[in-house]
Image 1: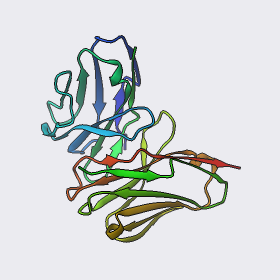
Image 2: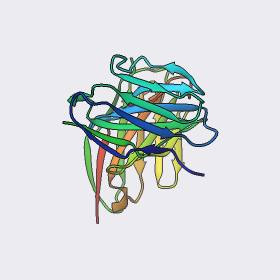
Image 3: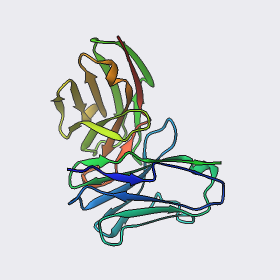
Image 4: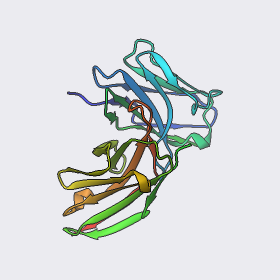
Length: 110
Length: 112
């Protein structure tokens, strides 16, 4: 069984640029999560979906961050106008019961 | 809002000695607890999930949960250098499908 896959693995941007992260969950997993993990901290939930519906996006900075899962499978997280404070690893996880995490995308904003 | 705190921040142990990690949480209605391991620049690997008071063993990893004391611990039996990583405690509320609240982690270093 393939695990959660994410791309790209690394991204380096200047402040003000946009970036998108892509996640392919484990087949059959109805719930998909995006977490932000700053350096030396634990992951913090940004948003999660059940199928194509957003269940909780209360921690997503809505003015610059957006996330979609249009067909209830793959998902995209986008940052418009990135800031240095967005520097972190972005983790995607999927679940039916237990959450399984992808390898993450390490973002550096200069 | 749920708060999860881990101690110690870092731990150095000799290969073969027991390693013990602690995690406290603030919301006594929490009922899903997990320990994850994160090697540098890699994703999270779930080690143990525990949902009721008591002990649960998964190979060399044993979790102890005491919800009355708002405490869950992880014990690593016979740690090996390959166990050197950051260990994260994660807690969720009644609904297992909700997002997890993580602690800051304990960095474990195992020396031969």
